[in-house]
Length: 559
Image (cartoon, rainbow, N blue to C red):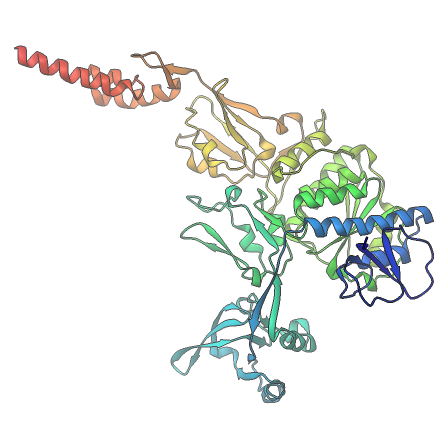
């Protein structure tokens, strides 16, 4: 049976590996899935394996076991990934934009087969499209023109231009790197679909008013745009960097990461039970990091550095029973708010730090010294297929338990809150329930009640927008009460059912009938039939009014 794991080495091996791992000194063929070396004969390159072997202070027995675990982690992520590879044709047309004369650069690219032209920034109005199909809107004298190109090399590119795929700024990423990307892209551009989208729980999709759209706001490219007239989101995979920043700010979990979705992340987190996870985004280049790992620290490799949110982090904390060490030079807005929130909660509950952010080697060494195990936070649950808010509700409710840890404030990019509902003015019309697509507000026929689970609420405020009653519903923004009631479905309003005065069938809430009657009785004046119809069900209402009409007609005919 062909093995899925490959371990390549040049020097003598320090210890034996699990028998499921093929060990070779030279790779000339094969069809492997995970490898510790870069080779065309394996699907996944896992640099964390060599990093762990070379730097870990674990015992020999633990090293043998953990190396196998690192292979298993990569295989789990690979098998659960939902991303696909795509290609787009890219021709040889190139525009160089600079406020200096770039004749030499134009000649250089033309000598390498490109069709290149140079433009001054003042000649360009806008850039649209994507790599391979970029449309530059500009002006030539007093005439507006459009020029099609495959790529753009723009010195000191403005934000509107650099957001487009295929536009590179040599002053930002370096001249050599910018030129290399242009040349490498020529012919065929490879890209993936990094984002999975569920419109049914999106807080922007087809709303009557805009209450969200943070994903488009934080997107560094034009991969996500708001189509305002329809209240739809537009996605462009070819423009997506795969950073995941949109996922960390999505309040409902409508967006997920295809390379490691929530279910996959939860499964992988199980491998870190009783270990300290060291999260390392791919861009951090483990090969260049030289430091001794503290015992029991196991690398947790991720692709995009910005997609982690409060559910990912709390899941990993509770499955590992240890703090998380996050090695990164950049923290996204959503991830940063999630880390602050969880550190605040863990400080209140356990008086321990949950997550350490480390930008460099010195910060890592400091975190290794300061990190203290948190076995009391361990909690396992089956969360496959659950919504983001559901998972966080169950996990945080377990953490809080019967304690009252006070109120924590949430920040700009993560919102939790509460509702205040005036039971006297609420008619249980259930407009708010229909507006809530994350099931924070629910209707219960068994006791004719409106219930609300604050921990499920995205704090979007759409329920307040659609509520037809005055002074009935108020949203409390950015407050999370760490007590038992915050994680329960609390009864917010109840009413009795009103029975039709004609047939006796219950058909509406008493308060809704009383409200309508209070408005319409003065209008109907002395018309007793119309007055009576206010208290009738839909079937009896026309019967009552028709009978009154016939009685009046017969009376007139008999006069």
